[in-house]
Length: 489
Ligand code: NOJ
Image 1 (cartoon, rainbow, N blue to C red):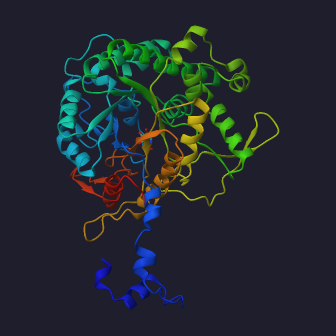
Image 2: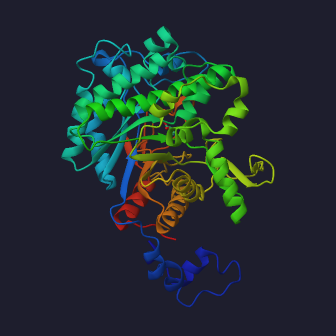
Image 3: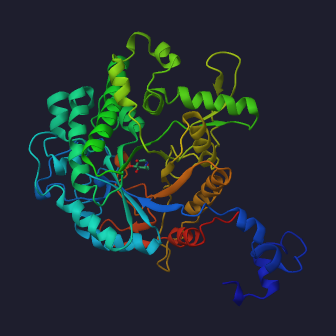
């Protein structure tokens, strides 16, 4: 691209003349070529798994086809006032019918892995009881297509689309009946698919669907439970995870790997002093006490129980053992830094700093940009919970992707975001933090829950009128990272 400019023109374009700066003697040496030693240091470990991710309700469409039951998100998205752009995912990306084309998009990225989710209401339309014989057919077709194209499937069992019938009959996750039903569904799926799926995630982002869906009423099922009921609901969710781990172990092929994907409360040292790093570790434990910490340690922390007081969940020692059934990996969804902390002499040992209003964000209001999240969160998690296999199960950004007059989508802000997060992730792997893979969210624009189709996270742009998929510039960026197994620093 620079070839058509003379050095003088290039200097002008690059701003040296305007700034009165001397043109570097050889701009191509000092600016363009990466120093070989630095590039070597930005490599990811051999065998690092590069992937991309989606979820069922966000892309499949075909909500009434082949016996699928209704989910709480069908109900919610059809409730006036709940989705900001007044859409729903009845058709979404029509992936249900276009999955072959979409597998080619995945292949074109050069990734070797794909994380998708299975819709519980396709398999058990009422959540429990009668299996829908056609329920798993779609996933059988998808798996065969992925494997035929050399892409390893990673399946998530619960990405928020609870069968509506369970919500109606027992109050969804408010009842441990749903925990048991989830385990039955998980065991059934694992029995039938573990010949081709070797890694299963039980839950996706329990922290989000609990707080948003059962606490604040802004996600499905739209409830605002009081603290005691919310704590019990959270307990039922982690119990459901543990029961599902046991059911999958019982029914799946030997060697099947199991974990979960969580939007861990991301705690970072505000400034990297040993005291603040220690404080960020305490914060990571305490602010994840009701989910990841109890799953990985089998205990609710004293801090959590004290804070909950009379609203603490009711549980038995046996349930804690189920909840902490051993798992093979932990998936971390990494987006925004949530808590910058400093050390404190007072219990619990950390203070959370307020965010200034000028803190930079991508174009979702919650998506603050903090690339070092991709370093600290895996590092602190690995140390705190003694993990040996971490996947970054999601990382990505929404951006204001406009189609340029030349037909291309120059999503330079997404590339900026990804480059910086990947650089920090590479810093973690170079220090030996056991991150084994990375799944970029998302393969293509899709139904972004309460934002509808307005927030675009895809590597491929989707025109939701024609459903045509077009690669954004970030496809070329990601391909380049994957090909070199490295990121420029
Ligand atoms: C996390 C969720 O798992 C996914 O469904 C969502 O689209 C992304 N974050 C972006 O918000």
